[in-house]
Amino acid sequence: MIPNPIRKVLSVFRKHQVRALLMGGQACVFYGAAQFSRDVDFAILCDTLNLERLTAALHELAAERVAVPPLSADFLRRGHAVHFRCHSGEAAQLRIDVMSTMRGVDPFPDLWERRTTLADTGEETWEIMNIEDLVRAKKTQRDKDWPMIRALVEAHYARHHRDPTASDVRFWLREARSPEILRQCWASYPDLAASVAAERPLLNLVPAGDDVTLYQALMEEELAERARDREYWLPRRAELQRLRHQRA
Image 1 (cartoon, rainbow, N blue to C red):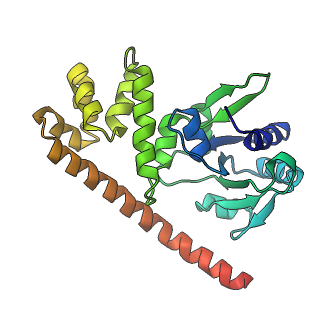
Image 2 (spheres, rainbow, N blue to C red):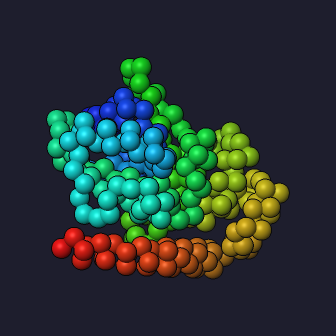
């Protein structure tokens, strides 16, 4: 169930035809990996018309921009998030974060094509980032994101493992953080596992059954992703710091 404040934001975005995908903690709730959040995060299409629609929706929500950067195509395309705080009705005090470009995540048109559509109890539908794209978006330097990645994959595996598609199995093999799931996938789908091992070499450790070595490889993989994310954000954080000084 989508909480009422977030439902309000989604309804206003829909009314103004904003091309946006729900992501972040609220999308994790939908996929069965519960995460409470008072923020709502969106991936958005960054073009002139959609930014005009977004601006109109934010105006209706009495959403005030907080911090830096400003809402502009240049900042969004360079990978920045823009932050707003709502001051209207049901959505009051809810924070809205919007992004267009994310490290390791495909461009928005591709995300839109793969989106998940959630039907409400009424006639409305909500557009949510596909679970595989959501997992990629969560590969950050933040401590809280890595347990969420594991929970997302495990929830998906629990829901689909009895009758999976080949795409499901490839997703688990590429993204699972659990040795148990990796072992079960390797045992049941050895040919798929061998093909995915070309892009994720730690899978070659699975048949040996050495969990200590596999856990170590999973941790090294996580640390490498965290390091890449820190490197990605260094110039962007420097840019934000300059903007803060200019505003002060």
